[in-house]
Image (cartoon, rainbow, N blue to C red; front, side, top):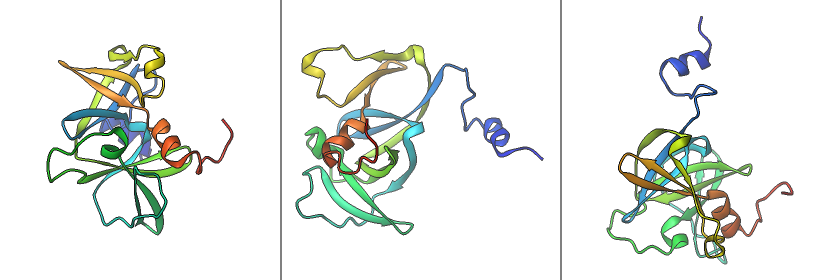
Length: 168
């Protein structure tokens, strides 16, 4: 009987170690296209009813219950200062597992997962003007560049490190 990891590798769900590749989940927020490393994503969900929280950070839309767990929900539209371009905005949630904290991020739509070589990942220039920008890299995907967001920086900003469990 094959082990689960062999089954997943046969179906090309997991990356083999040493392949020099990563998988990027590409999604849209208004007219902008962003990406996140699939290793940080637990699942993609349709948007659900969210209970607002008083005195929360302006980017936190509130919380919702998923499998008997309360999950905070962050609006990337609000956090990145983007104006919604349709009534279908924020129809999808990307549930992440960052810093031992599950958090959902509202996006307009998820495009697909791309498998990219690390050679296609471009570093963001080290400029003081970009030091507070939540961007970790740019991913060259075909003829376009995908902005890789720094979800840890966004989470630290909106929670003001409230949920951090360990010292950095």
